[in-house]
Length: 370
Image 1: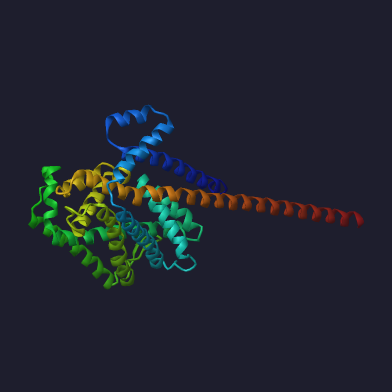
Image 2 (image 1 turned 180 degrees about the vertical axis):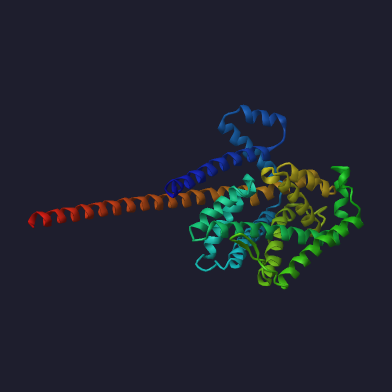
């Protein structure tokens, strides 16, 4: 069975790359413009014409952003992805498996994982597959990798809960405009502040559980260990850092006039990004824009769309483009190792067969001599 899996996983990796390229093209066409005439030309035109239309549509929107914003957005992107790599490092420390796995290896694995999962969606399949392939090659078991994936996901959720709690306590009016989307979202300031307190209380209870050193949860042979205080302390730093870096891309891309400030932009990002994740739409396309516009009605819609486009380019599309060669190189290396291993096994089998044949000939010769 393992023999077939050695060839199956590289094939799955190749399929993921092809899927990602197709998804990337669809996203670029979507971001080029919502005009019906443009979309009609994209559907009927040839590849070269489509490329020119997509490039022109994106250039028009990006042209609204001042040059300095690109530099700051790039720095914010680096901060976000560095913090995402820290997620993996924290999980490895929790598992006591950080030795022998270098920071560059963790960073590449994390970068590819989130580049695929943010764009493709279905993070258990896309991101989980990358992590399984990468960390299994370093000796981690399937159970350990499952814990690593779960802890990374929880670290992200923990950061969202923590920051959203702070935003709702400090700026409860941020939820007022959501009633435009639905009457169900008509939440008053007092209710919003209570929700914020509840979210912060959850973070406090989680920390107290670590301080009290809750016992591991055992399910058969599987053991789930409660994170200790050094791990929780790292989560308090890494998770907010990643989310603030991602929100910073949008903040720097928004115009200075009418910009409500980083705290409000952070809250709008947390609410809209969470809505996009819950919708299971890859990249939250459409959902994120609708919620973000609803939360920030004071900012002109074209400016918001342009800022979100910069966010998608820096946080989603460019990482996806950069991750594809890494996936191909890794799978090529793994395929070579599988072929080399098979060749070695065959050579050993042939050598053993020859040795056995020589031994039989020796026994026969000895018997004839007697």
